[in-house]
Length: 580
View (cartoon, rainbow, N blue to C red):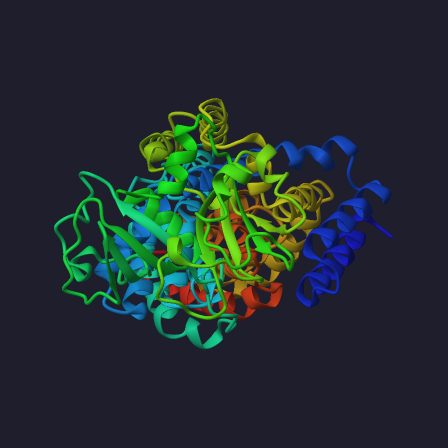
């Protein structure tokens, strides 16, 4: 059996496994890579080149830089700003998709998706929307925007660079906008009104911690909260925190009204999920007295954990002050969770069996909590430090701008930014490696190798040559439609750039042989190669594949309709702007 037939059989088998997910997609990709090696369709050097490719390095670096933004609290800040301007969840999603498409016109699709991924996830969580309802549209919006300018995607740049060799002018900076803008507008309308009927429902995006904790937070001098009413502070509206009591000197006000004025030195007993308490503590100018005393003692807290109080604990029936908790264990209690809702301040609560404490302290102290306190989970990564936000933004923005403007390759810009983030301790090495979605990396690297085999064995040429013999009688519109369809098909097993380069000579040669201007067919191939929606193998789609808990078939169901919209708009617009 000749290599082309074998490769096409492997491709068909891989698509079946991807669609059914009988095996995890990364396992399927590894098996496909193993088959290519075992059947001598690829040499080891070619097979493993994908793991060190620009695409893989860029994806890995962007995963890490996104986590850096999260740790610095940038994402929460952006999310709150967007949420304040959105009248409802639907307006929020539509505004976000429009912004993504606009940004993506001038930066990498992948980088744009990476920037907005945590923002959109946070907004969905705040609105109670399932991530599956917004993350795929996010990726698709970034792809749609990439068709507007020549720097919108690397595919556009590759095509533009290849045209002089064929005797054609390179693409103008905004030349693609004539078709790219209509495609983006119609694509966004599809995402607004049609895609929601096709997207998987998923589970509502709840808070990362379902426990409602009670915490005592003291208003520091100079805090923005001082002098405002509880309504004006936005503690409930913007931060999701409920103030159950306020202590002012010797007085305690339980269940304060929305018109209650906050003053410096007030201790607010707030109730809310872990993430929101930590966010509030980092941005509102409030502090935990227990944590402050611990730090004053010279011991720097480095870990954040949840611990449950077990039967027989000496803490039971006593307040934290009475049990001398900080002196006994050397850690601070930031908050307490109890199944039964309470309006008491944290300092006045008597600990009960089953209470969950949010503890902060050194790793050594936390590991010696004793037999009556069992650690449930480590929440260290949820801590935010806004002091690092400007530097985190500078690194991320610098990488995106440098890569987007072509000052250096995006992969180089991202790797340098990651190195600086590690050197400046914006993120630890362990957390950086943990931030990478390794199944995504394996899948992309293996499929890059498959794209190489698809070209090297001649399978791509066999497909395009076989189809070209049928195209001549179809006329210019039929030829444009066929080239568009074949290019879209080829972008599934191989990279967008490779598909464009395979189809470009065929499009130019066939057009010239039939006496047509090759320009409209070049534009058609470029638009088709840049808009890959049917499978999640496009890097922007891979970024949302895991967080959205999607199946392979979800992209086929939603992406097929979007591809048809793109196809129809391109066929309508291209001949009018670039006559045959």
